Length: 460
Ligand code: UD1
Ligand code: CA
Image (cartoon, rainbow, N blue to C red):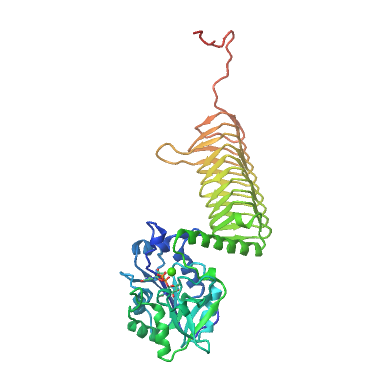
């Protein structure tokens, strides 16, 4: 960030109804890459290190406010949506006269820090700056009217435009930077005398010019960045654009993806060197992947950390878990929240883990449920073993100490502890703690009945 001479307030316009979404949710709460649209705009205002951020809210206000609980955020209610100028006016009582005001829209989530910084640095402190772009199809946007020296003299809405103005292809992005003191005066002078009967923010341009203040049109080069979201088609398009950017950033950071169109990033992903993501990887929340991690097809990883050289085979679901280095997970493993797997563990096919620690080198390879458990090092848990952690009212812990061997099909009825080096015979239901180094088994004696014959089907 370049050093600023004046403090900066950000005003985010977020009072619009969003009728075209046809949703119960207010528009700015619709999710893009797993985060509300408004959240993306607030991230931007955080990266440019604004001194304060005031959100103008209206429709669905309580839902919007309760989604963004950061106490540093300021709120201004716009009870009736009388236009963009009226919206900004609602925020002004909270903004000191010596601030510069950056106006953003809550439904324009792809705007980049670099573009906003350009607008802020290319606009002198005492001037007005508006971010514009040359639109291949300018329909619906306000048109930028410039004079012979290139200064902006007016912004004309499509509905109010003369035919020669309709032909202008430079459009208003809706992003402005304006000194606070004159902005307050100009907003007070707005009149709703236009085709839509609204208080247009864009009319401050004419007022600035009247008062001898220069209006700089800073032209961005990317229509996508300034596109607003009005309906679900645009939301899906923005999602594609967001994903393309996020995946490109990962690739340029050294991550190999099998197909950039088939990886979804819905959060903050940190990757080491030579990470590989196969098709249909979905990474949500805060995900950290160590060097050489290999994620097989169709894995969904949420708020988790995976250590170096660990491999996830296809179709694993990992949530709020920490997996060590050199582990082999899946295919079809499900890690529910709060697991900690040490290095070199193996979790195999159709295994479900919940709130469990698995020690170094231990194996849980087939068709098993381990919940609320502490498993030591070099433990082998046989196929079909279940920790019975729930008695219908409470959850209980299972402790399996180092080097234990649990045969196949064992039920461990918690609370229960298996000693170090113990062996549990296959098919046992273990409800009492099993001592170290011994074989414990609980199994009805096998018998065979001589002379027994199979029933035969009755004749009709
Ligand atoms: C506005 C601009 C237009 C520009 C376009 C860019 C005006 C008069 N026109 O048009 O020049 O090309 O944005 O997308 O400013 N909002 C409120 N309260 C209101 C009205 C709007 O909070 O009373 C918010 C909306 O939620 C939205 C933003 O302001 O986030 C822009 O409003 P919108 O109705 O989309 O403006 P446009 O008519 O598209
Ligand atoms: Ca719009």
